[in-house]
Image 1 (cartoon, one colour):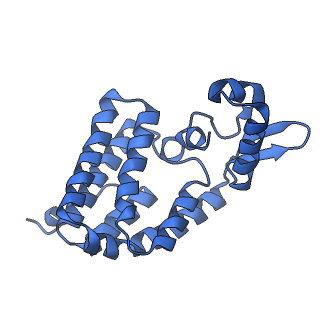
Image 2: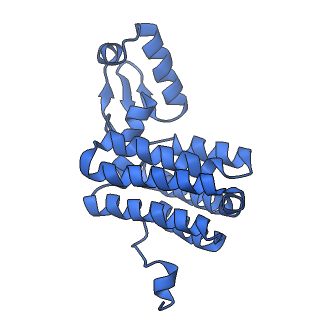
Length: 202
């Protein structure tokens, strides 16, 4: 259920009917209720007494504050990601980046979401500070992710795909500074800039 909320299957503000959830997930009533209570603790859904549960609608301030924290933590992880990445890791990241790119044409939004998670899971797994990585995943799980909040146009999805490849190339080049910049752009949805070698006039 959390995955579906984060992928945009259930839109922000949408009321969740327990009977429908029981059918969708082939679960018992108490299982659904426990799941909803857990999601409420994670601020993915909100419980309204005598009415039920609806998908949490993050306000602009909260979303901006979460982005700021992610920016600090994910850029901090860049150095150890570059230091720890092996040739096999880089090859695996390229495969995952290509999988995301291929799905832009042939996949669903949920397919793209799962491919994006797979890429970032592999990327973050290369970091040395496990507590930092755990906090990052907790932050990422607090609300709707890219399909709901960022991928509003095909052009933005394609830009995200190109950013994935640029991040892999920065790791392959051992360039932690470039990875930090690309990570920041990726989180903040900065307008696309040319790769560093093009900026230098090469």
